[in-house]
Length: 392
Image 1 (cartoon, rainbow, N blue to C red):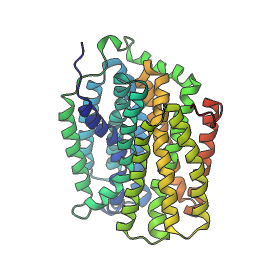
Image 2 (image 1 turned 45 degrees about the vertical axis):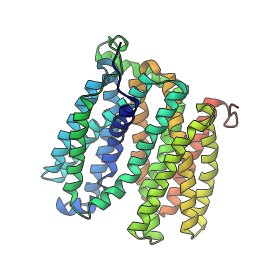
Image 3 (image 1 turned 90 degrees about the horizontal axis):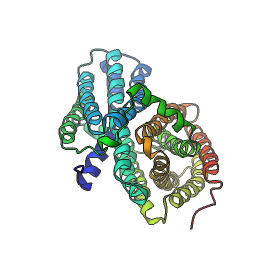
């Protein structure tokens, strides 16, 4: 009989490693101007360090997911965390912007292990309603990380420089590597795949052909697209257009992060995961229309903040429920399935984030919200027949 860690250990440790990927992407955002000056380079070159980090996060999940199905969860997760720590050290000692960009790619690639394997661990240990409940708590951490990270980075920059941010990331990597040595593998040896690792990548083909799985994944990807659009545009909307102070903006940022957390936790109130997803999507559609309206025609920052708060609340319901329904369909290939989810999520973020800066940011952000919402509706109808078919 396999030894198991306590539920508290799983929730805390796996929650933290699952958040490292998105956290490392955004934690250093306030330091971008300082990095541009330090490396004596352009803003576009500095932004490439963010782009390559997200590419690393996307690709890392595709490769690390299958490894965890072949060799178990512990060893790939521990190795990825150790390499994440080493890559963070290389970020600290980078001598030019090119070496820094390469180090950021490796940092994203290795940090992806926590994202993809954390989902697989949850699928190993739980199922049904219990799995949905765990994903709701895991999504709290994963959803809060990319939103809170820039605020925390800005606060840290008041007492240190950009190196201080990466020093903190290095310390987190060391501590998590040490903590993971106590992790009891959640995938029994008899359940691991016996094929060689090259053959394991062939398992992506049936997953990608599973229409229901892919539509659930796309629902999540387009939902995350809205969140990444919010992350990219909100500093300019709140501070440049409505002239909020950095402190006031941070408060709004934190409040909206709290909205996601409330949405994540509220899914336990629904009788089933599908009901939770469809309710979240209905509310998301309504609030998308409201948010776009207030962005385009109102001068009230209070109305905009309230609209974003409610929009992100319903987003918080969609993320864990769509993940649960997707992975329940591919339980036997949870490593690969989790990798597909993570890959498409970060690809959508990498594509959508810079689009908010095209033209008037209020209009471009509104257009992205509308297009993503229309895509969510299409995917929902394909996978459920109708968004009105909520199970009672």
